[in-house]
Image 1 (cartoon, rainbow, N blue to C red):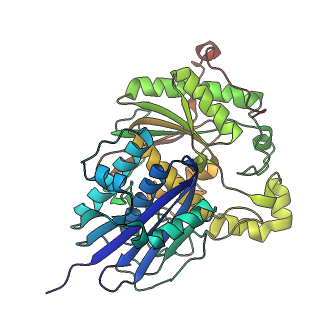
Image 2: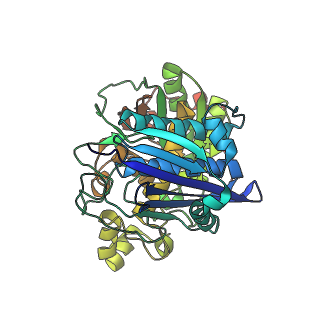
Image 3: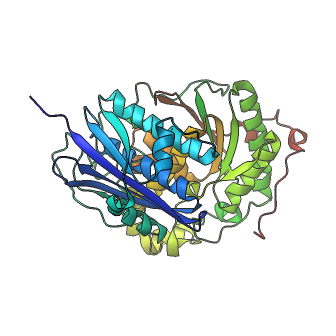
Length: 443
């Protein structure tokens, strides 16, 4: 008789100030041998202790699924947070909105484990028995990211061992691998997946509808920001750079996008409506225009920020081709490459995966104002292409792209790079007269 795989997930989170500087830690062990299989840690910015603890739970469950360890497995989740254990067990109510979203996210992951024949049990343990996860969460609160896999996924003969701190598992949260590693850990190219619990995609296709509509249970409308002076001069502009505002053309594009989103929502709206933007000015302004036109509050999530280009920020593409041609190709094709002081594609993909999961957990229609490489990251995951090929997906400034997601994790791309609102003669600027572009340059 074959024994079922037995796993232990140890998870924790902390906040220095509560709320304050927060982070989570989680790890996965073989319950029989004690062997360490995976470690995760990630800073959360400013958050409460309970939000950090829930985030650790989500990360631990996600790691089990990322490594394809859930099939017929018994998973015991150990936490020293009695609150999280009792709330997830249904014995205590969840009142805080952020905790409700994370609890829903965790529940979806548990459902995915169970769908693979596994079981999940949450167990409270004293703090002294949760020291490893606590240590990881303290690393996260110190600003360090950890994503180490000590075992290859089931069915993968390789074991790539530990990744260095801050080096995210390639596409573990986005399900697309680098072009040079089509069979990297966590990825089965014959089994494209999507959703919080890495659910197999049964039917992903690009819609041929001429009038954009949305029908999924959760609808994501991804809007690339309008143009800035950097955009029009073909200058790199990433996270941590000059952070320019929209110029006059970009403001007009944002107004047009806001009207287009409103029309789309009017045709498709069911459930709550949320607008989220990255923390960079051009996305914030674009998102604020949309939120104002829809009459809702704009939320901000830094994980939707553009890739960090470090010392290349502000450089013109012709200059980069001339002076850094080989490295520019590596930026396109090598998920581990980062410009000096910049961010690797793996790191971007990991944080975008978290932002995507949070957006899906909101339900209803979620409009996200974000950036070029971020859009490539999301679309690459959904359609199952590597990040090198994802550069072939066009997403123009102020364009709309939409994805529909169902509760079972199924998803489809409804449309990509819709810019009809920028050229539609039926569009009347008066239609957008009530749209306000905020001046965020002083913030």
